[in-house]
Length: 114
Length: 116
Image (cartoon, rainbow over all chains, first blue to last red; front, side, top):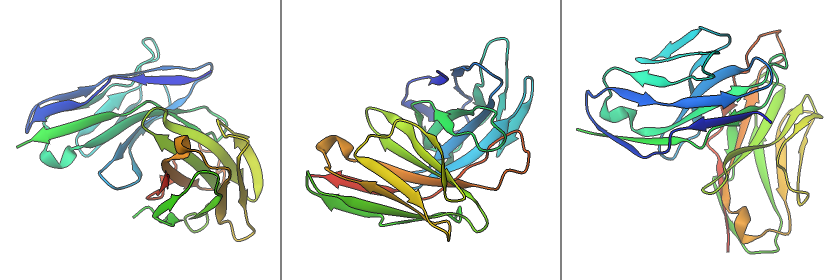
């Protein structure tokens, strides 16, 4: 079945460092891809999305590009802040209209030190 | 605030017991999804309802059941609880099918279940 693999954490960075969190997927169709973020004690929030190959999702300085040839959707940010400390989840949704369920990776915990 | 509410926030119970978790979706959203987040299994999809009907089933145990009521709120029932059922249970909702090619789900804050 469909699956998502993302890099194991935790990831610890200093403020203003460059961030990459790797995510690869396996899917039979053409899924939509997402990054969700979970701040301590809260639910998940959609960070960005991409619905087709070569799409780039971006939000709050984070970016990810849908690479069909490498089945990847790596999350990047040029300069992280302490407030970016959270758990990041890569996810896919199979394309059954807008009602497909989400399949998540295991999450990557990011800690940013001042 | 996502607009999705879940009650209770925390629940502590004993093995063998039964509990009910409640979720109210965002206003106007017809779909409700339930997810379980545990340390060993990560975030797993349990079940989806759309406008009162079961739409999809994931890794949901037979001891678990759910329903969506006419006012669109949903309940997840967990019975014969085991220690391994301790987890964070999330509810999410999404809008009616507008022919979009992606599925944005809005998550509630979760219910933390502890089985002792």
